[in-house]
Length: 397
Ligand code: PLP
Image (cartoon, rainbow, N blue to C red; front, side, top):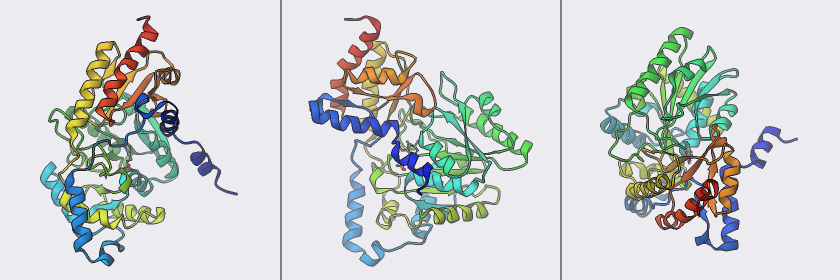
């Protein structure tokens, strides 16, 4: 007999995937241009040209057996060194290549990190709204997901709510800024308050509480905001990074884990990362894309396109009357649904060919997520539908 839990996961795709599949069918029925699909976070801006230039250079000038061969299980040493150098220079951090593990995107980075630190009975706290797959990853690591609501106005951590969710079983908290689904970036005061709370709780319970920072949107920040690199703020921290969004490479599956050198027993924690990677089969991340990294660090896809999309949507939706969280980064807009049941609201939105994701799977009710990593022209075409949807609730013409 197969594993029932895995069957459940495989046979019930996420709400986001469901909607995406619906969109594909609907586009065949009424034409691609007439469906406004805001479901998936699939980058719509091409990779910067340095990515393909580097890949071609590698393909043309590298011994194929090396290029397509196994690397060290943890990743190529020179690639890891280049990441160390880049991060230390860019964020004034002090990460070490010895504690960097290359892997296949942020999903694997999170799964490996959680399996490395969690034992059965441990609890992992997430801040709602949160990326729905956290539940799957945490439970696969034999831990229990504990949900702490973020502040409903700012969507930043609510320190007293968070404190009430931490107990002697708490092993880690996952944060994600800029955030999916709200687009919010944490400010320094809030990050320090969060770190102070965790340090206090570590002392109280006399064991490390890891801060796992899930950072696929690290570079997708607007208005010249600075990124706050978590190892500069908290000792027992682990960074889970991915090039999926910054370089528009989600299909290539490349990213890394960093164990903060200041982490208690950092070497042992890193060995546990290696062991988790090994037991999950996440060793030797794709070699070609590892070798691409040194040349492409510091580059991003053209973020001005996402910023323009954000501005068009934010300005138009707020002027229609929608209540929208102003996003600092990523490519999502979090909007208050016009009725308490966001699932119903999204069903109604389909009548106007708007494909919006209800917030329920992100752990909060009453909102919708719009992914604006789409063609700007689609956003422009969709505005009449957003207006008509609003009017259908507010008696407009
Ligand atoms: N974490 C968050 C918050 C995400 O939004 C995503 C993907 O959308 C991931 C992790 C997974 O990223 P990857 O495709 O690099 O595995």
